[in-house]
Amino acid sequence: MTIARQLRLDLRRERCFRRENFIVSSSNADAVAALDAWPNWPNGQLALVGPEGCGKTHLARAWADRVDAAVFPLESSTMAGLGRRPILFENADQRQSDEALFHFANHAQAGGSLMVTGRTPPRTWKSVLPDLRSRLNAMTVATIGAPDDIVLESVLSKLFRELNIKPAEGVVAYLVRRIERSVPAAIDIVARIDEVADAESRNITRALARRIVEGEDRTIDLFE
Image (cartoon, rainbow, N blue to C red; front, side, top):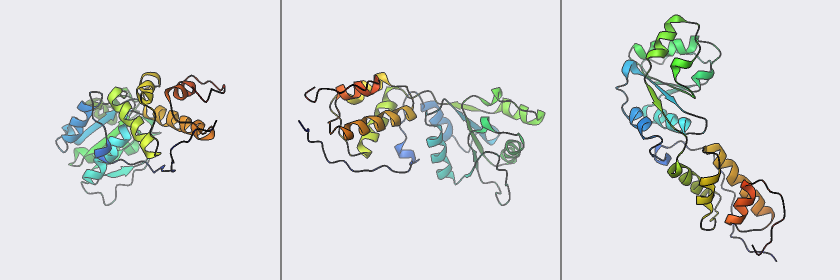
């Protein structure tokens, strides 16, 4: 028996970091408030920290767009022409040397602004420059927790919508309770469900979601 599935279009898009698309909940509300306090950050600096997939990049890039910040990759230290323009330095905890971050911190203390992101607070980062060590220890920290139910449900629903898929009732709630609490995990599970459903011409039901979550490769009854 072939089950007719709704017409689905490939609507995969590049990541969008618009602030209105960021879901605010108890897991990130304090961090959002800290960002919104710009430009009144102590010493002009703020560290946005949290586990992988919690939304750091989304929130940081939305801030950068709003304030026209220069976004630097790891190890880039070109300061020419910046003036007092704000700076976003992502994944600063993974830097290979201290020089760029030291320059950015000085830029902030001289009247600019600096946001850094990382998985742990700056006071835990290794540093061989004593002057940078003191700056890291004093940096204000805004923490984002792992996505809670509200964020995860919103992310999953958005991912399904972008694929023009309407899962059966209860599928999203089931996934919220079962998958790892991160945006990458949500992206991965939706992609896997979509792939199997498309290959088998199946509607996306809770039974299919359970099969993928549990990693089962068995063929399932089309009447399930």
